[in-house]
Length: 121
Image (cartoon, rainbow, N blue to C red; front, side, top):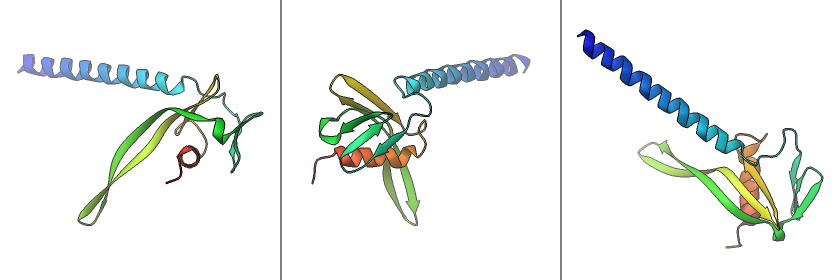
């Protein structure tokens, strides 16, 4: 009995350490390439403004997108919803990283940037 309790404690300890290590690695990845805190970001029909820099939409290219997939239940049916978590943009030699959790109004901003950069359908 004492041996099985010890093995259980050991298993839980290793599992927790692994999860903390993975969490720290993901958090480090999320902060790579982010803008300095307090950088103003604005967008309109013509351009994306990041601090003092103004970049026209045609010169921006999506370099990388990270999505999460969730399911929303509504009665007997469920709907799959994809959310943009991390968006990396490139304008010439410059790169800009926008992260939903690290930017004020991040979900709304990333959604609007995504829509502006998508071709007309």
